[in-house]
Length: 49
Length: 456
Image 1 (cartoon, chains in turn purple, cyan):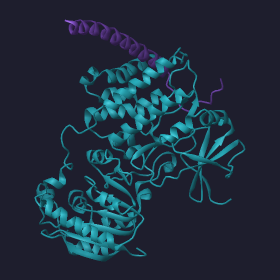
Image 2 (tube, helix red, strand yellow; image 1 turned 30 degrees about the vertical axis):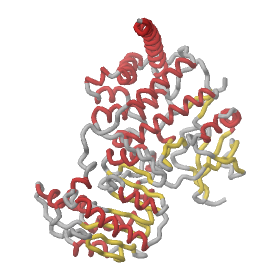
Image 3 (cartoon, each protein chain N blue to C red; image 1 turned 180 degrees about the vertical axis):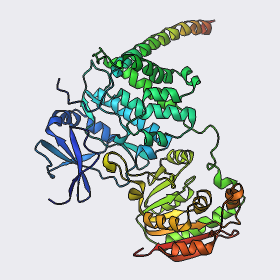
Image 4 (cartoon, rainbow over the protein chains, first blue to last red; image 1 turned 60 degrees about the horizontal axis):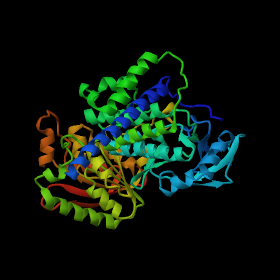
């Protein structure tokens, strides 16, 4: 791929930090999803009673 | 061709540059950017962005070519009231940040990415933020993180965090660090409790720690995916849109008009007189100095002209901006220290004084602050106002007997000699001719309509 000469310095660690933040956000995303499943399991149970 | 001038701030990006011919602004696209430009235009991104009024629209013209690697010349919609991040209130910086992120999202949907994220890519026009740098788009490589992430943090996110915790406004930070405030400095400025804020911890403290450890190692390419980048941009959007920029306690000015014991009858009498003065004259643009809640800027805007409304208090500008009035451009300007010409060779950004000059200037309940609080002599105030106005000035004189003037001098051992209507009039008569002079009913305050002398 042709990329233009970069005229801003992305920062030597800017890419690494994005990888780490994305990993944390990904983790949080899955935990949230999992938590919602547990919650909905119990709330569904409540509605039925 | 005569009068061609390359814009002194347009030297960073090798994709092209901005130039003016006889005052009309053009943008040259260089050959090296041809592929990116075609992608922007041909795959629907340009259409989508301009349709949603996110990006300034342009027409391709057979205009003047400026150099051998000329590919195209663009004629963008012309903006008349140029403004800078160092003049924006926190809500404006927030709007500019969210605009940048929205454009990055849409760009990714169209196989492109923003290659920079500076607030100088954005202008406020017709009450909204609009992206003006048509050449900021690059082809998106799905395996790479966002090249402009750090710049985005330093220019948008960090000033907003500092403001959130220190209530500084964002303008002083943007003025002092036009290229962005670094993470290590931001981390030092934020209070300890900010570490409990997930966004601040991730983007400020964690970033700072990693940078400190890794600063000397060469950059490696880390694998990334569009999902990860979408999540990162979405997270930035979520923390910025939820960020509360409002003042924690009311500022000295936010209730200024309500607090005066003169109250509503005074305001109504002043407004009536103000409207009479406006009916008497014609002008094409206006500048309201010390606009406070914007009551009089709105009356100016009713005449159909564009109005710049300035105040040194960011919370006043915040609330005026939040009304998104198409004819009013609210800006944080301290008249005792207006924006200087800045950037390389003092040429990249012009001074507030050079940009704001208008046919009608209004200064209501302002001069006593400059004269009594800041000790600026009346002749200097008159001389400066005569530079700001091209024609007319509506100005209010508040005498020493007035409650607001008494408040200002109560704790100050200062001389008030020379602060009276006679000295005021003699100072302003050097530059202006008095068209109207009336006492505001029920007060000792005087409202003047002045016309600038042809030569001052």
